[in-house]
Image 1 (spheres, rainbow, N blue to C red):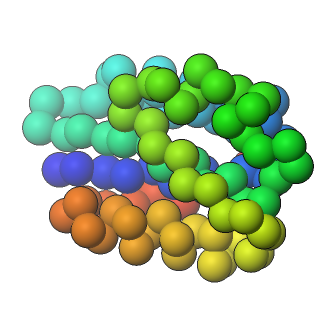
Image 2 (image 1 turned 180 degrees about the horizontal axis):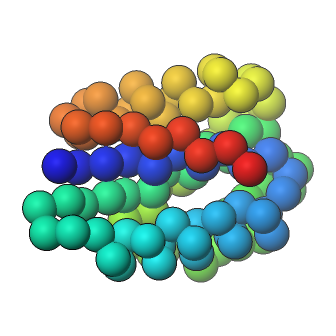
Length: 97
C-alpha cells in the first residue's frame, strides 16, 4: 500500500519541519508492504519555505508544491491530492498541525 502524507505550510517553517521529522520517523517503522511519501504544500508563505528550509527540498521522499498565494486549507490540500492521484497513491493522509 502506498500512502501519501500531505502537510500544508503557511509561514510556519519550524512547525512544518517538526511535522516532517515526525512523519519520517514513522515511515521508517512501516510494516512490510507499505510505503509512504510526503508532499508539502507551501501555501503562499513569505518568504517561501524552500528559502527557510532548503534541506527539505533535497530529501528523498519529500515533494514541495508551491502556491504563489495563500489559497486556503482545502484548496491547498487539493493541489497535493490531485498530484498524488496521478501517482496512483492508495491512500492520502492530510496532516493539519
